[in-house]
Image 1 (cartoon, rainbow, N blue to C red):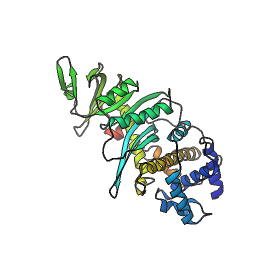
Image 2: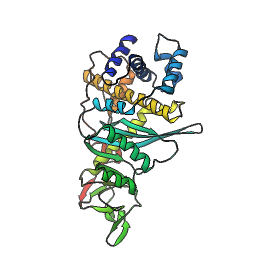
Image 3: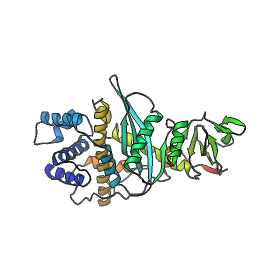
Length: 363
């Protein structure tokens, strides 16, 4: 398809969701198509393909100007993502991705929606530091979520061992947000007799086995429910949830979708780490554009799969469809921009994350 027609098609589709004027939508459409073509966010690599009607130097200046000064409301991007995903209770994922550029520490805290093996970003924050996020930063991100999507049904929030702690747990319970969080093995519980190691609850669990406690236990002063799996490596997968769930371990397996996202954004896809941007506001602007690029890649891949099924490898995911879209930036005008309707991440993901199927013991 000719460049002008492809840009015009994508710009028209984007205009149904974003209240931007024509020049901005044109730039966005060209940026998305350029990233899909060169698989990099490095401005020097994007400039030669951004527009064939302009000089490379002019394209580079245009890219710099956008990253430097254009204000993007993340809520608008988040609502666009929501418009194009199934209207079912969301499985939210929370995690960080980080890397170094010279002496600069790049550290992004990202909230996404798990969708068929891939997390689609919703909201994010460029942390002005290295290392873990703190409770204040996480709460600020979640409050933006609640402000953007009041009343939105959430199946549960998934996060790994970084995202635990007394104040964070109390916040999630106060907000009545369901969760499946991984705990560290050295956590202590409390009872009327005092504190005791969490692992005491699962000390008889064999390697490869799982157990879900039917009755709540008290953690950091809160009543919660616990599940455990003893991995083949003899490590522990310990999950805390706000309510009893027989499937807590399987549900937690969907957390891997955000790792798949980070791989797609970085070394296996768009090479986000190749950017030379270091200022938090510019990184967040770039991430907004990459969110829309990811969304479009998945959407185009799904459409292409509907036209001609894409051969998938074992344990493949939505990333396969996205990769297919990256291989071809010529999309048909008959491709409708509608909510995606593929099945969500299945329980088979547990095998991918944890190894073979386990026996289950209920206590």
